[in-house]
Length: 474
Image 1 (tube, rainbow, N blue to C red):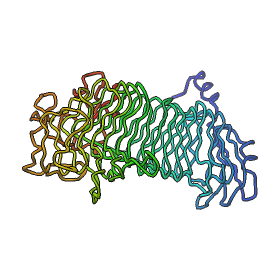
Image 2: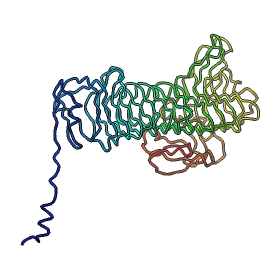
Image 3: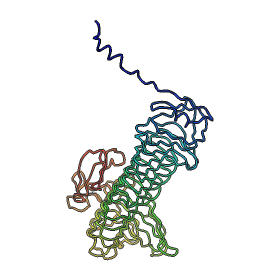
Image 4: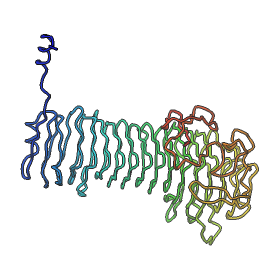
């Protein structure tokens, strides 16, 4: 069968498939010179060695190591206004103040790149860049205006978030993570510390471990099923939720000549909505002259809910009765403050708050400085229990059979456990409690726009902070 002449003409006119050219770079040669003569789609194959050069990639060419070779570039590798660049992977890049710079480029995948261990710049993304960092061990991560995602990486230094959005998943950050803009999501990762300013938009932490302090000021914060040495918030007009988390170690702060105060959690600022639920604040050390506080609520105009937590101090010899620290201390002038269904153990006083400000109900206290020291400051708590809680420390914590905390929380049904039974005092009780919080990958969205005690079920795979309050579900 013959093809029609017009079809034969059409086939003959089709262009031949473009074949990429491979440009080889030998030691002591210029990588930049090969990039300059390449066209988009070409490959720059680099033989092993150390290249003390600055390199600018301004077209969609691919830099690769020759198979079996190890390449180190001790200068900057800069991607400049490259649309859809090929992946950059495997090479070791950096030196003092040198690293990988991505300016108005992307989406770019940077995979399994190494660092030189010379306090390099690491990976810095600016402008409209979109960058995915997968694996590897960069010296640091910096996002200025860019959208970045870091996964399965080990960052030897710190992370600076001044960009539109930064996600950190399944990674280790040796230094601290600091946020001054945009949205920050950290999940299933370990960091050396975490801080944010009021110029940030949202800070969301899910299954985070911070070996240092967490000090935040973002307008929206969700700190769920996470760990830190201490937790502090100092912003204003914000929505802050700490759910199912563990604060262990206390934070030291001078309060006078030779005196120090130790806090597990400080809730400060102005006109914030705080929800602290199903968390454990422990390891707060006894301080000279009673400066220790498990949760300190300071500032004015707050709406505070402290529900179903366990505050436990480090036991110590009490030489004088000046060891009078508080499990929970309320200062300032909150608009509303509920302290319900908490366990407070081994503090000086259980609760310190002024009269008429705090609704305190169904809290259990044990092994205080004195059995009579359940409260001070004028607060009038209701139905306080004084007994051994028979609680088991764990992640998550549990109650032993026969614990006086079981079915002993406030009888108001909105605080019932998820199975519909009366609230159990302590971190395993209430409608917020999720025993799978430390293992699930799917947090459930809970809205702060509803009443603070209500729970919205669902299976959304990410936490949305338009509400600011959340628990998780398998």
